[in-house]
Structures are given as structure tokens and as C-alpha cells.
Image (cartoon, rainbow, N blue to C red):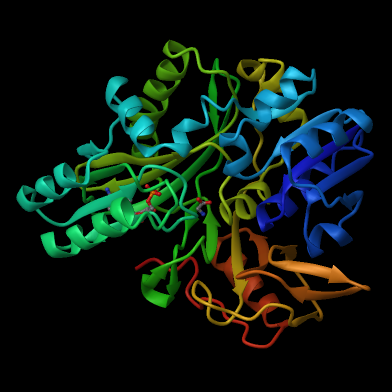
Length: 416
Ligand code: AMP
Ligand code: GLY
């Protein structure tokens, strides 16, 4: 079997690594991949990114299965394009991908199908949105409707700040269209959890829960990033929390997918807030999380390709996902300055890694040497019988990595 994986992050390296473990898989093409997939068993990087080029490549090489990593190609209809050419592809249709691509679509979907979520109002008119923020109670959360590379959500403490954010999003159009419409929603206080899951449109099978660490600094301080580390399972996801999630979020979501007749075979990622008033859905993502994937796939005993094939064949109801006992921890080694400005092209040295799998993220290979090419550079991932063991192994190994300005959080997995 030959597989094509679309994307270039740490998440895609983890998918490629896991897919390569299937004995029937001969080659894993990574488009475009990164300096980590370059060195991975069975993997070949190919320098293609447009949907048209990817589709033609899949046809030429008779690719047996394409797995789409990031949200952007999904919201642009990569799955529809592949399917219309008779290709086997794993991911939601363009219509279904609106659950991530449009916050207004997602919130209306949640409301229509009784998915527990924060109260909200949606606006496409600046004056009306501003009027609303003059009267609402604070804090509120303002969200750009469309994709904004993780920068489209701002928590506002008062009406002046809210007016300034609305001005930037709706009038100055800093997200080039994505912030022309906004959702303004109730602020929820609690702890977050990521539940990645797989669906064939008939059932949703949740994966082991995970906890991301979004802020750049220890103690959850500073600006948000794509994610500075993850642990799995999430210690806050107790039986009670999971039960509430299934009843109030996952089951009504599945009913909604079916009622709307969405063509949804793929990953559905529930971003949860666990509060004193219960478990709420903050957002859907229509793809795996990064760095949650590195932590979660490290604990997956089942074959990922087989699982995906079952979803495409609509046989998930017969599938039982097996998990390794224990815990995992993924640490992100980032470029100094990230999530602000940072230098690229610095040489990366990886010395004596003992117990971890190091996934490449923002790295490229050139003449056998690797160089930084992004904010999140590497994802050092370990497993252990206890959370403490997984964390200790990952921290021991991240010391073996060296590049100028390397930065990582020292408190991943700590419970505050
Ligand atoms: P989202 O893209 O909707 O997940 O928002 C990004 C981040 O903003 C979340 O991971 C939370 O940390 C925060 N956030 C989003 N919505 C809310 C909310 N209603 N209350 C508190 N924090 C939120
Ligand atoms: N780590 C959060 C995300 O992938 O959206």
C-alpha cells in the first residue's frame, strides 16, 4: 500500500510514523513533509502543496490512501476533489469542514442540535457588534468567524477593548476576510481538554483524552501558541467528565452530522472547557491537534491505517480501538521569540536521545543536516507507566537537543 499524507507539521510526522508501522504500507509520501519525515522509515517528502498537484500525484502514483493533516486544505475542499477523481481519502467534505472553518456555522450547529456550549451572538455588521459590546457583561470572548491561524480569539475585559478588537477584525480586516464576521460569546472559566476522535458518519469513537498547553510561558502565562506541549490522558477527564462529554456533546454532534447529511469521514476534535457548571464545547476542529496527536498516537496500540480504513468503509461500529496502558508527554522545542518574530535557518543538533521519539515540526533537511524553519521546531515525545515517568523521560531527552535560542516550557503536565 502507498499512502500520501498532506501537511508539514509535527502532527503529520506523527501520522507518518504511525502509518509506516503498518506492514502492508510500502511508501508514505509526505507532501511537503519536513526534516523529520525526511529521515523517517518508509517516508519520502514530495514538494507539492496545491490541491490540483496533489490530486494529480495521487492519480499518477496510484496512491491507495490519502490522509489530510491540516484544516486549510479540508476547508478548501481537498476531500471533495480527491473523491470526485475516484481517490480514497480520509477527511471531511468541504461542507462538513465548516465546523472548523466557520465559527458561526459551528455555533449555530451546536445550538440547533443541543450541544452544550457558551452563549453567543453572531454579527456581520460592525455597528451592531459594537452596540452589543456596549451592553453585555464582561469578560466576553470575540472570535473571528473564519480561519485565522490560531490568532482569531481574544478575551476582552471591557467595552473599550472589545471595540478595538472589533475595529481590527471587522473594519481593518487584519485576517483578510476571516474577521469580517464575528462571534461574541460568554467567557467560561475552567480547564481545557482535547478529545480527538474518529467518525465514519455513523458512530464517533473518541481517542484517549489529551491536554494541550497553549500559552508560551510556564504557569500558563503569556500569549497563546499553537501548543507548547501535551499530555495524555488528560488528568481532568474523569469518568464523570467523559460521561457528560458523551451525553451533552458527542452524541448530539453525531445526531447533527446525520440530520444535516454531512459527508463526514474523518477526525473530529472536541475542544472542551471543564467548568463548575459542567463540560462545554469551545470548538470543533476537523483534524487532529498538534501537539496532541504526538501524545495520543504514542499511546495507540491499534493500527492507525486499519482504523482509518474501517472509517472509510463505514465499519467503525465494529472497531474497538486498543490503547497502551500508561501515559505520554510531548514537549515542544521552539525557536526563541516564538510566537512572535524568530530567526529561521539555524542548525539543529540532536545528540543522544534515550527514551523518546523526536518528531520534526519546523525543520528542513539540507545535505543531511537539519535547520530550523518554523516556530515549533521539534516535538519530543515519551511514554511511561505513570505521568511523572513520561514527563521525566521527555525532559531528560529534550536536553539532548541544541539550536541557538531553543526555548521550551519547564512545566508541561504539571497540575496547577
Ligand atoms: P477556540 O479557537 O474557539 O478554541 O479558542 C481558542 C482558545 O481561546 C481556547 O482554547 C480557549 O483557551 C480560549 N477560549 C475560547 N472560547 C472561550 C470561552 N468561551 N471562554 C474562555 N476561553 C475561551
Ligand atoms: N493544539 C491545538 C490545535 O491543534 O488546535
